[in-house]
Length: 279
Image 1 (tube, rainbow, N blue to C red):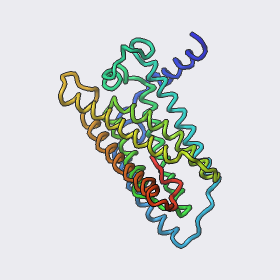
Image 2 (image 1 turned 120 degrees about the vertical axis):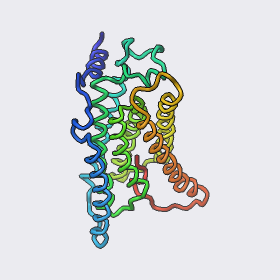
Image 3 (image 1 turned 45 degrees about the vertical axis):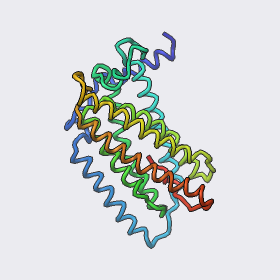
Image 4 (image 1 turned 180 degrees about the horizontal axis):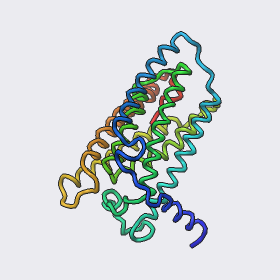
């Protein structure tokens, strides 16, 4: 085994015996997550009222640091999750023997300390990402319904997937982390006033993400309803996943056509917040 393989094997076992326990693990209670989300909506609207007659704040340095942290944290979790999935197979490394059904539904694959820890750390990031909106308000940038809804709903979605022991959650989480690496890198460049030509394509990738997420959750729900060997977990996680991710798909698709398609047809431009492409 070479150094790279040893490193990957170490990452896949880094979580050890750690397990997410609903009601016991920090921030695992619904009352906490729901209170934070409601508080988030309240604080944002109060802060908007406070800033209404004030000048925009210069938050360039803390904004760059904020986005850099989320870009790096997302990259670390993305690599860690990918390596853990690749090495956490009864056959050793992931192979052709590991079918889609095994990857989506198997409790054998997903009862792993590293996966539990990664999912929980990803959930914690959703609390920190609420600061995205605070920066928008302090800079007196428009806060779209899509942005506000997405941040609150995603926090509750990640809480739900852990508490319902969804084995399909790695699909949207892995994709989401990869998108976040690119997205927060884009925000860094935007804060530095560096033009980015691929913003439109980032939105397209986000929309594809929701299609993939809805598909994996739908498959898990289908297995639960129509096959004797059901996916590990319960149907509630799948229902919540399909519902929330499908709502994202609708809203992001609408945003895409309003922003880029109408712009292409009219050949007119309308200032759009640098945070309007938000996931």
